[in-house]
Length: 262
Ligand code: CIR
Image 1 (cartoon, protein in one colour):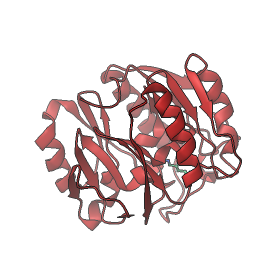
Image 2: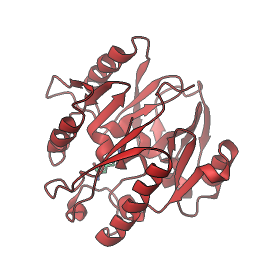
Image 3: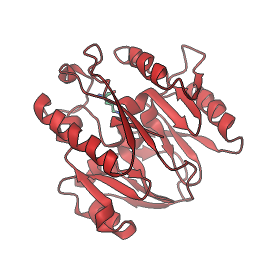
């Protein structure tokens, strides 16, 4: 039993040819746009194979990071919380996303000093963990908590101070209900003993960003044997999809950031 209802839809935004101008902390070189589009196309096909109805917003060259749409909002049932992105180059991304979520009950951050990126918000089986780090502060967490409690008054939303990676979900995701997988790069100041936790070896850090979609699991294709074995422990092989993510990794992105599932 998950806190989240089963996913039916995904909202995505296609990458723009300006994507190489986006923010990054990596030194992996510039992404190849054609290759990125190919990887992106397979990602969308996989969402559809998982049964999701995909709405794709057109690329917007003003926003080189705009395809990392997960950072724009947090959706829980009929509630859509529209984020306030700290990075000035990304702040305007939410306008189009907000318009496309008008069928949901929308909530907004009410203070310019409160920041939050959706990539910091991890729904687990038991509670919602919100990373407080580079892009999200405690004030942002308070606004999110108030919005999510409109949908479920009992929901527990906890601030999780972390460092070492860009977003909380860069370094830790929920592979299966109650099962967390984390990279050795993330330092977390929070008691995770409520869950079964697996720490990946150093060389598999990037693979900690997994994307469960209903009864399926998306993982990064590559030399990640420990992660793959873990995936196979909880999912049958025909429900695991391995996707190439190299061009998005160059810009600090991963599987979760390319879509909003709801
Ligand atoms: C950024 O720095 O904002 C983008 N280049 C990467 C955002 C990745 N988003 C995510 O992990 N949720």
